[in-house]
Image (cartoon, rainbow, N blue to C red):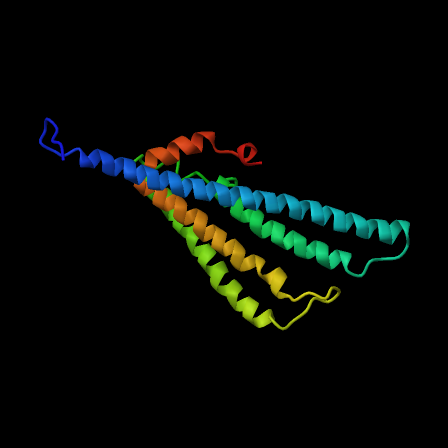
Length: 195
């Protein structure tokens, strides 16, 4: 261990870079999860539009309604909503009320960010717990017009909860391990980058 002019070891600098590497690794994993999520959302949106459009054509053009199109489109929309909400949390795309955050001293602002991230994490945990209970309850049920288990539509709730917990945990951990890494990433972060 080398000593600097002030008698402190250089290992402190390597500790900072190790923390920053961990933070960057977490942010990389978070971005990969987001890109997969956005790809799945795009596929779900395309499928929902196609199923709903097919239902309209059959009903109004061919005068022979499809019994399953409305239900399938609704299930696709539920999945799209849940996954889109999680992506919105990661991208900070949801509307926020900044009346208090813009008026507190700069020293308190990080605490408010941690509080909001913890609130989202708690909401995700609730979705995860109660969604898992719903899966157990609906495991034997089948959909009304298509022969699929109701587990698949209800699975969207715990998946959304898991994603909310993951994105919030990454944001909290990174903000404490290497706040400058998160600030640099926030400058280039945006929806267009991930599409």
